[in-house]
Each structure stands twice: as structure tokens, then as C-alpha cells.
Amino acid sequence: MRPVDYQPTLKWWGHTWRVIVVVAISGIGWAPRIDYQWTDHPWWFGLDLALGLVALVLVMRYRRTHPVLVATVTALMTAVSTTAGGPAALALVSLSTRRRWKEIVPQALLTIATMLTSEYVLRAPDEAPLTLLDWALFVVIAAFMVAWGMYIGSRRELLASWRARALLTEAEQAARVREAQSAERARIAREMHDVLAHRISAVSMYAGALAFRDDLSPAETKQTAQTIQETSHQALTELREVLGVLRDGPGDADPELPQATVVDLGELIEENRRTGMRIDVHVDVDVQVLPTVLGRTVYRCVQEALTNARKHAPASRVRVSVLGAPGRGVDIRVENPLSLAADHSPPESGFGLVGLAERVELAGGRQEHQTTGGDTFVLTVWLPWQS
Image (cartoon, rainbow, N blue to C red; front, top):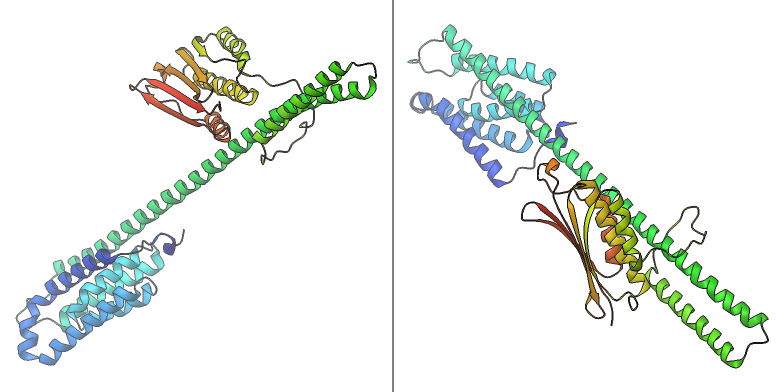
């Protein structure tokens, strides 16, 4: 990862506190020499201050675009300007965030050399001569600036890698969700294909009877025509439910028996009980007037809810409630205590629930799942039922 990839964009406060720190460092270094320069060498006072301002402008504007050049120029300025010390320190720290030793080592050595040079060139006559401890202190200061810059750079790169990883994970999750939604759409379309094939085959049979039977009475002919009309109307109604859903794949053209609907809930419950699940069921729906398409959706909702419960809490008791009436809609509620083996963590929303949500949305309903009381997972679905 290149340094430019993880350099943060600084806002006004980021620039402000850096300027404050730079000015403070320059002020601390310049304070012992202000009186001497002002009294004995006023031109030097002005030159020192001017070079410090130039160094500050260079660092604040160009330290990221030209880090090596800015660090070199500001370090050389410190040999004749004490006020350039603060900008030079910021330039070295900024350069070190790139963590390139071929840039850092020469700049660190240059910084130490210019600090030593400034002590001989800029010091006032009354200042004490340099000692070995002063030399060691200059080395420690340069090493500290390099270490601090490298720490900032490594931290920025780590945060950038976390952000990139999070974005990649989100993109992969979104792709899996879209895949699950597409699979559920294809599944719905396949079911509708099977149902339509069943109904159209019935229409074809009755139409064939009208075409080849000339011994039918007028009443029988009328009854057959009515049956064809009703069956065709049901087929068109169900086709309208999935209009716009695209699907592909081999085997889609093979007609099958009609898919399971709400009348098959009893068989579904018994099948799950045979696997060891404990299920309490309450169904209050008039299956005689419930539309076929809605009945299939209700069946799939309960089926997915039981699959989810069996996966995440196989030993828990599951309560299933299906209530509905024309005009009010169908309310489905499935709840189960969380498994003790899961450390009381809520069941993860898998792609089965994503597909179920897609099916419910296509049917014009809504789905919610949550944990209530801290230990019970509840899945609720509402489906519209026109009166």
C-alpha cells in the first residue's frame, strides 16, 4: 500500500493544532536568543523570523507532495534560523510516516548535523559550550521524531487496511445477499411455472374435450367452458404475481405437481416433529378461501422459519402461529428460545431469511426478526389478503 493511499485528509483543526505545535517548538528554541539577536544583530533577528515563516509555509503546503525536498530545505534552514526548527521537525515526522528507510536515514543524519551546526552558528556568546550530553540529546531528539512519524504511518496504514477490509467484506456480503435474492426469485418463478403448467394442461384437456366431443349437451358444454374460463383466470392471476421476475437454468421447462400450500402445513409440522423438534401450532385461517399464491407464500414462510429454528436452536420448543382473514391479511409468528449452547447470542440472520424477505416483499408483505427478553428469537411476517 502506497503512503498516498492511507494519508488522511486534514480538516481545519488538523492544520491548526499542527501550526500551534510547530510555533511552540520554534518559540522554545528561539527564546534564549531573541534578546541577543534583537540587540546585537537586528538583521539576523529579521532573517531568522523570515526563514521560519518561509519554512512554515513550505511544510504546511508541500510536505506531502514533496516530502524529501521540503524536509531537506527546512533542515538546512535550521542551520541559520532557529525559528525554522519547528517546521523542520514537522517535515521530518511527516517524512517518517512514509516508512522508507532510504529517505529517513539521510534526513535524520542531516537533521542531527544541522542541529549541531546551528548550536555553533546561532548561539549567543553567553550560552554554555556544547557537551557530549548535548550531542547525545540531538541524536535522541532526531530518533524520537523518526520513531513518532513511523508510528503514525503504521497506524494510518493499519486503519486504512481495516477500512479496505471492511469495504471488501461489505461488498462480498452484498453480493451474497443479491445472490440469495436472485435464487429466491428463481425459486418463486419455478414454482409459478409448475403451477401454470398444471393449470394450462387442465385448460388444454377441457378444450380438447370441446374440440373432439360432439355428444356433449349444452349444459355440459357450458360447464366445460366455465371451467376453462375459471382455470385461465386463475393462471393469469398467478402469472401477474411474478411478472418481471427473470430466471434461467436447466430443467425449468419440466412441469411438476402443484407446489405445497397452506393446506400442507400439517404434513410439514409432522415432518419436522419426526426429526425431533418440539412444535406447538395454532392455525386460524380459512384455507378454502385463501388464495393459492398466498397459501404457497405462507407455507414457505413457515418452512423457512422452522428450518432456521432447527439450525440455531434444535432442542428448543418452537411456537408457530398463523392467523388470517380477508381484508386483514395473514400474520405469521414463529418464536423459539435461544439455544443455551449459543451463549445466549441471537441466531445469525442467514441467507434463508434473506431469501424469505425477498419472497415476502414480492408478495407485498413485510418481515421482521428480533430477540425479545434477551432469550427468545421471534420471526414475524405479515402478508396482504385482499377481501
